[in-house]
Image (cartoon, rainbow, N blue to C red):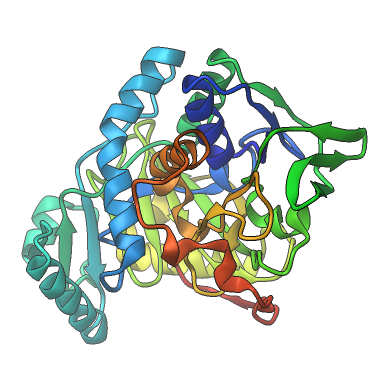
Length: 376
């Protein structure tokens, strides 16, 4: 039993089904319609990581799985997730941002990662739509992007074709526990038994689990889609205050905010103003773009911003694959593989200690309800 029909839940379910496990996915709403579809689709472990650590290691491993994963999903479903491997460009707009980027480039080079430093002139030659306010940039050629909506749909379809039963509109109220073991879940329609339960319910994971160990809370992110006749960038453009992700159909996704407002998914004028102001500073040409739509999603945050991956320390047969925060799209392939290894093989090929559910033995309260207009 997998609780949660987002990209993580569907990826885990597909992987288990392909290993011969009979799987049911229960989703409180429509599969794939929460954070998985609200994201921008950047696969940027280098661009988004401030320092070396377990999250970067896991992200690099998952990024390496993507070409094979996308090809397999395309073959299984006919849906192309549109993986683009042009790299991510991280731009600096002032001296302080430039210093941060130079420090990031330095430690990543020492670690053996591909990083390229670009002057303002080089940035302009590479991406003419970037504005004069950009002082310099770092290019991460091995970071990628894709269409996360198409990817999530592909995972859901592939899971069904692998034999997974996906049931939408079925909220899970609790994990059923008997004699120190998870034996199923409780829904408004009754109890559903299962030999094992994977909690992949995203921002709602703590509500499903109900234990003191699962410190997951929602973090709202607002996004805007603009459109030009042709995509204005080759790269995804990242900055301290906004990221701009081109799609093949001419849209540019601009985001995102980071807001501790509970389960409030409203799009606000204040949030959009901050996104657009920063967008137009990075790329003035987008001021003439057509507004397409705006939306908000709820990321599953944790107190230390690391995902929660692994077997529950108190109940046999209960596993957690949640708390991915900003990295759910990036980490889907590796999370699916690790859950399959744990459940089918009995041990993961990666040390999951930094992500262990038991690290939150005492519930840490979510941060105060505040809203900040800044990018991921």
